Length: 375
Image (tube, rainbow, N blue to C red):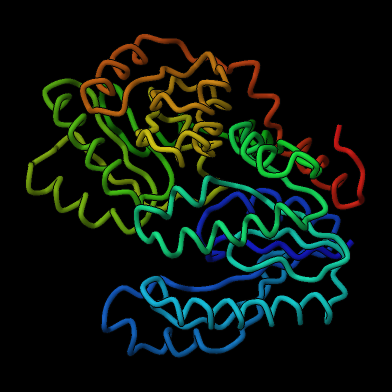
């Protein structure tokens, strides 16, 4: 089968689409789209990288064919540019479908529903509320595109039960399926936390987080907690990359936080080993409508290795009911209390984690591609 998956962001950014596409590519011809919108300084806009963004690019990522779509930035503040980018994106997507004889398209809000033999809408996040803070106009455009998919898609896949209820309320007649983010249990079995811990050579207890570091509010909250623990034998490990990292590193230096270690980028194949090296993991999310609807990928990873995990009390996380998770309010004091509680908990792999076996979830998605009802 020939599959085109349209991710919600650039292909280089860790995301839900990676989980499914890498497994699907082992037995199907998988194509994905890519686009770049991370130009943040005047120097960026006068770079060769920016000029390359005006051209179509195609390359292979393992077995996956990646199609780089031309894009003009910055578009967030200009509706005319957003309309132009959408028109360009739609044209290229339709050309890919026709040229490669795509059998099924998995779409997201970044482009309106294309014409395809079979169309699946992947509702991966509460995107409208997530964008309302940054741009009300763009949030309304996202709402329009999502509603178009909900009306026209052959099936809707929701990554959380909260999002399932949202889609069902919009169109109860549509075929809606709850397929959450998953865990690669092969990587869980290969995880070597002792090796990572030996490399770190950090005495005492190790608390940390792993993932994209783009939310400055979450990182700031984490550093406030680290400051509380500074006179104790507790070190905070922050692993990943993102736009908020530089500011956090500067803050650590200014405040002299000697118990904070920045680990750097962690490739997906090594993430479970780094997680296993921790004594306690933290998911310091904010309490918002978007976060309430999350199916947190890093929480699943922490739970798969049986790690005591402190997480903001989010609606979907509460429904997961993992025994290794301590739910807390989003403020630093509550996080601190949760960490102290988690430091006294044993490692425990909650039995509910088996519902998130990636291989089974991919099989469910494949059934939808063929028009079957997933088991």
